[in-house]
Length: 509
Image (cartoon, rainbow, N blue to C red; front, side, top):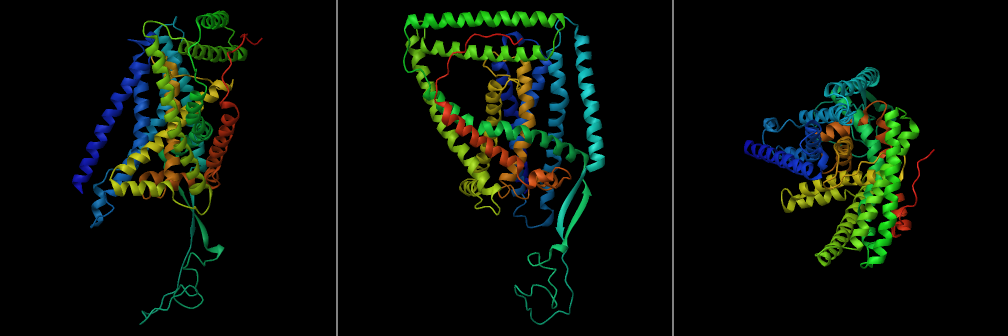
């Protein structure tokens, strides 16, 4: 038993080191050249945030493995040798909440501060914003915890009379208790009056995690529901809309001229907005125009990339075109595989969560059977399905950000991602990772039974006063499936159409 836990600790340490190295690799390769050799604090926050998000997802499979360490114990104290997963869960999610609501906003305010100000003034300004946020959040959390920070467990009060030890037992479905006429010892036949509510106050860390999960669940239901469909379908329809052949030089010159005119219009609009910013007139219209310009720039970059694909230049033009064709084929393969995973997810939610009683454990049984083939195969598949949800959240945020004016978009680009975009996406991933874990612990309750995560997210969260009805009536799951269905319909109707170049751009007056 001790050897098993030592091996689990070693694996956990090695995985954490690999996750940290991989996140440093992402940061180095995605960062913008303007951020090279500077902005070290935001970079540290990015690596820490990505590591916490990845480790939190991997902790649920580790929780299952930790449970298996004492599953076949022959003495009662064996489970005392396992990892303290409940304490680790609370620690990782308190750190998650601190990063999302305090450290990442501070890093963003500091990074986006006026470069003409001194470092001290930028730090002071960022601290004022974060300090105000901390005071407001602390007051809200304290008041809510004092008033409704309790859990209400619905229990059934069962009892039975006692009698002398008989020579034989005479129990049946009509007589489940000792003594005639006593039926309050059977939960199946007990009356509704036997139901009682057992109320107790939850701990403050668990309450903070619960409220953070609610905020993340709203975003997860929206972005995840859209993303679970647009992630695979976007890849598939990208293959369908791919350039079929190389265009002529005259066509290239014509398209490039139009894009050049569009670039000049956007530069003129950006200069106008910069002048308004310097004059201090940063109202609602200014912020709306800034978001519009950002999205038009992103569309322009997509048009330029597509034009470069349709007319490769240089000595290796044929090689470049061949790589473009292979890239679109890879998108088709990944899109088909992703579509299978997305359909499996939606089907599992409907079969196991929305229908009561569940029609089948479905993916739970798949993971258990994979574990029987090889000890970690089911755990790896389980971790993959959880990570896929996070990718769906990011894909959904990108899609809605491109189409909705009131959603700010922060695209991630290889070698061209500024730190504020990095920080925004890390915050989104961290906030939704809590909900992903809660969602997975509920969706795979049969596979992840008797784990510390299920105790926190299954029993405490779903019984918390004031918000338990959101989980009792599957509000987030229904919203997730509904948005996924609407996105499937949207792509079926419009996804095959080739994107038209954007027209003339003007700032709203």
